[in-house]
Length: 131
Image 1 (cartoon, rainbow, N blue to C red):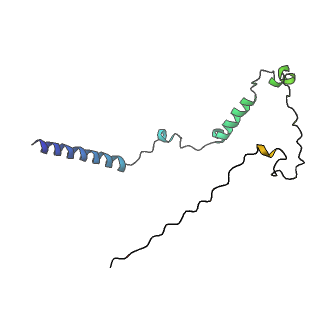
Image 2: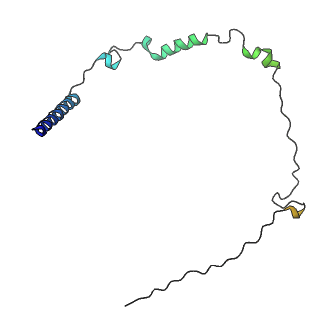
Image 3: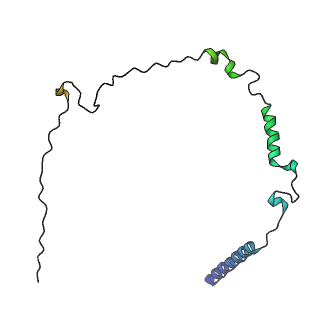
């Protein structure tokens, strides 16, 4: 009897979920002004967002962020900054071939041993038939 009650309750819950989902998906949407966020009246030129942006921009242009004292008029910025650059040295570029060996003591060069020639015989296989 308990299996019958479990099966019956599962079927009732599944039917309730299916009916609720079909009602939610198949209902007609309500067109409400609060959902859209815009009134249905025609826009006039005063409601144009570009005009509002321009009014805010003209208000922002009148703001003086530096308080009448431009920052670069400060003597620290005008006279305190010093140029510490140094000229690059001239390099002798008279070598005709930059990849040629240097004319120096050749005993300090690193000499590597010649690679060993190892000849490995190739593996050969023979197929034998046992017929």
